[in-house]
Length: 242
Ligand SMILES: C[S@@+](CC[C@H](N)C(=O)[O-])C[C@H]1O[C@@H](n2cnc3c(N)ncnc32)[C@H](O)[C@@H]1O
Image 1 (tube, rainbow, N blue to C red):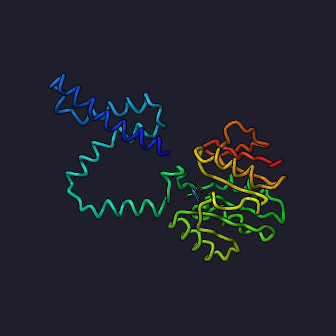
Image 2: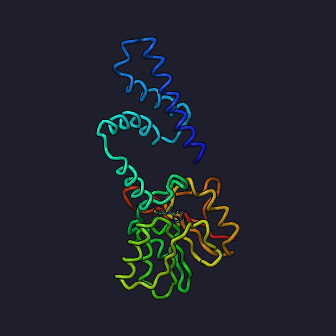
Image 3: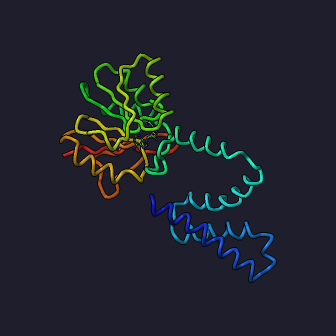
């Protein structure tokens, strides 16, 4: 991730230099310096093969920053916005796992994979959607792990109000010993899957299941793929640990 951030900063700086050079060579461009900078930034981002969403960020970054400066907002607002984002999404810049929720179809199919007596963990529990669903079952033990404060708090409240007997840790999922669970459910992001797989191989017991909603482990064939009949045509990828 650091290298992506470094590349992003580099793209912005080089785009500023190129836009200045272009406007110097072609003076008619000066009034359009910001647009030229944005165009160079998008081009460089594309050439460096940064993930596609960076193209949008680079297109808007400097024009929006200049606009925001013109509003002359108190810097406290920027600090508050940063704090709010951190409380909501945690260290998303580090692991690139945003907050979105499992749908009913995914949860029904996940439920069907869990044998009575199983110990289940939802890695990155969000606002407790999967925990609440699975927590209806009396024959399994359900735990969630969430590191962002606001989703964790909302999940806590939700489970409390519903009277669900579900454990919920506020922790980094990478710190949790997966050896304690028979089924590990993860709805995370492509970025984290290779690291998670290494942890799974090290810690999970033979016979236990890793179920990943939507995201595959690169180069590792799942034992089973369950296609979900939802609008995203997503799948549950299941690995039985050997
Ligand atoms: C895509 S949401 C999934 C929410 C929930 N599992 C569901 O299926 O509805 C991923 C969640 O993982 C959390 N998360 C991301 N990285 C994490 C980490 N390293 N440790 C714990 N939680 C994490 C995010 O804050 C987010 O709430």
